[in-house]
Image 1 (tube, rainbow, N blue to C red):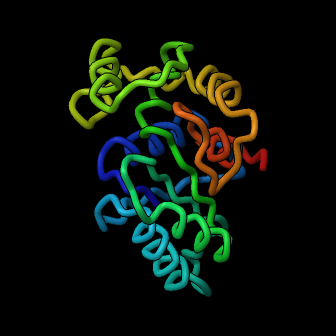
Image 2 (image 1 turned 135 degrees about the vertical axis):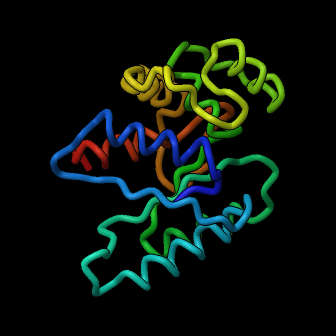
Amino acid sequence: MTEGIRTEPQYVERLDGYLRSRSATAIVKSVGVGEDPLRVVEKSIELRDAAAGTEKRYDVCVCLVDVDEHTTLERASRLAEHESILLLVSNLKFEAWLRWHAEDKRSALSSSQLDQRMATLKLTTGKRLPLRFPIDGVDDACRVARAADPAMQAGRVGPDPSSAMPILVDLMRGES
């Protein structure tokens, strides 16, 4: 589940196609509840519970959220942990993760500076991924993310910049 309605779902769908794991398939849902991490987790629980006991049940639920200026992130983290949902946080926002597909830079940037850097690197067009987004840079992005936050774990806000997206990559590869 993602709080974002364009960039994050596009990215995860492309990543799923790129990795083509035999052991895992990602089903991406943008929950459409705005950018409130607590609502994202609550909606994830609702969708997971509705699918339980059916052929469409979820083996693992993952929520992708940004730090931004959210006041509910701590409560979302506690609820996700209680419900066995992996809450993967990007600090300051998801674009930090996308940036690492193209460059190994870990400087903290403001939201507008990061947007400008994304445009310069041609990694996004507005809030969409371009067709030529370097998805094959995922291993580089994982390496940079792990170096930026050696204590990475679900439900935790890492330093600025950081992203727990390598946890999802490992899941999609069937490695976790």
